Image 1 (cartoon, rainbow, N blue to C red):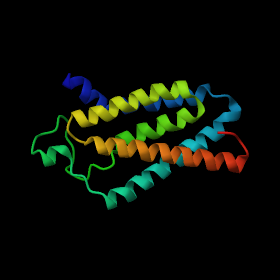
Image 2 (image 1 turned 120 degrees about the vertical axis):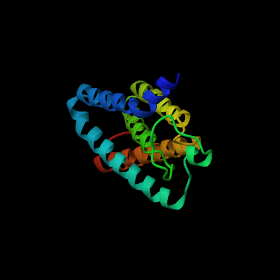
Image 3 (image 1 turned 120 degrees about the horizontal axis):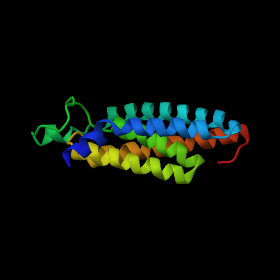
Length: 154
């Protein structure tokens, strides 16, 4: 069981990245530019927001608080928000705005990554939920602004 969660915590992010590349490749030509712009800007915005929020809210990692060794090595820094959960969350959120069914697949992966990061002892649940919230709000805001600017529909 530990092996599954260690894999989910460390390596499952790569599957999300591969799936989003495949999704981009399969998109109709006329949607690729918008998807790329919304995806890149959403990722940048979400990471900027995450860094700002991490300055305002400190959440020591579970292995620091509980004085135990995590299942994967990690620095004893601020755990809020989770960068791994933020990345898979923003990928899932952006894809969901273009294709809800494929977005569900990416959200399942994101949930596994998030749960795995909690299970291995490097994040609290609030770190994961905070990342997902930032990712969803960023993707939605960027898509909405992009749609207004280009007169496209969400």
